[in-house]
Length: 122
Image (spheres, rainbow, N blue to C red):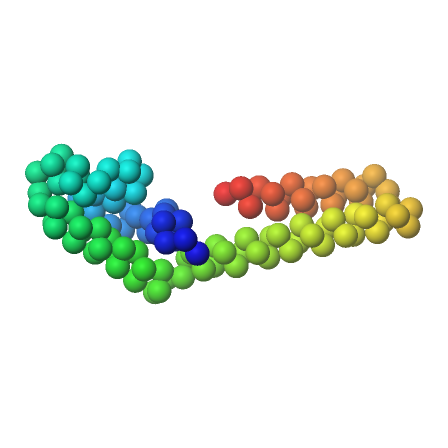
């Protein structure tokens, strides 16, 4: 997976566990797309200090994931939800093809699909 996407997802899950200083530097670099030089100038710290803080942030985020596995659980749940959607679509097609459906069954399948889509959007 793309490192930028990976670190962004980790920050979404664990960013609140970083210090306010680390959060600020992370957000300036990754979300506001400022360079190390721009951040060091704005915060009046050395460029090396910014770099070191970013590396500590990344290390901390990966360590949190190693211990807590929230991102991995999220990915697993997303894959399972997608499989449920595929299954409901197959059931719906089969019921329609075989003319074994009622509006009640179709509404229930649509409710399942709606719930799964809500889960996937979170």
